Length: 193
Image (cartoon, rainbow, N blue to C red; front, side):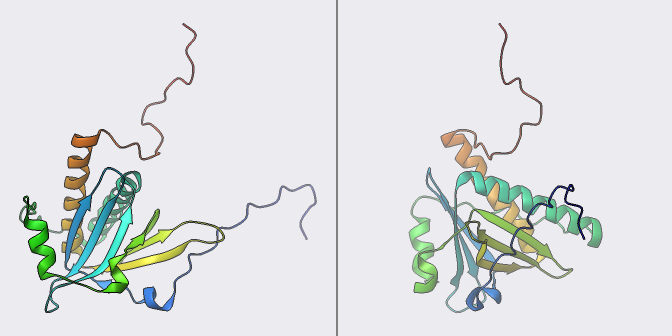
């Protein structure tokens, strides 16, 4: 029995809900990233399908995308410490004006993916052979997995590179993204002068 003077333990967060359509995930071999000032759209592509198809579309704010990249980098670092380094891949290609329309003319985008899945939280797991990225919406009463994408380690390295490149382009155009993380150096909250 608990002592009545002991402080109550904090409530445990509810595990994310995962519905049947999302639980299996989608295997992706490619990624297209587009952004506006307000959001990023990540289209995960199954390049082995004929025609290639968008198997997952995730929409996230710039601040969340910056946190997402950090989570992927952290998880990838743990992977490489455990299983060894993944060789660097050739440079990613950046679309030129007009190429986006050409690309999407060749891709199949099903109605179920067309609107995308909003994400404001992320969970990353890995095995030796794959990374599982769960994109979540974290709203009461419980978080929900809105999209699950599975990729191999080599492709995750490319994803990290593409996201980093897109964040850099975004910050060059719109300014530094405040991701909500605490500053690396303490800042004074007031000034006596």
